[in-house]
Length: 87
Ligand SMILES: [Zn+2]
View 1 (tube, rainbow, N blue to C red):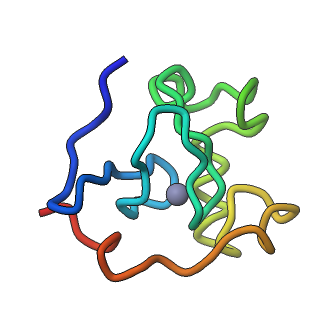
View 2: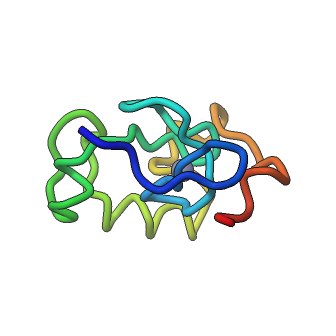
């Protein structure tokens, strides 16, 4: 699997929160707790492993309370400045 486009800090964009937090394939995003995986990102209504919530729903939750699911909220953090932009 190919990692997505990287920003100038060598990080790829998280499919859920949109910040540039991903350094490794299958990494869990520290800002929203989405686990990067190509299957769920191409099938946005799939709610099976590894996230057990669909990308569509996780994005909505991130907008509402800042995590893919409420139970992971305390494991998340604010994005660093180097994670804000894709260029
Ligand atoms: Zn994220």
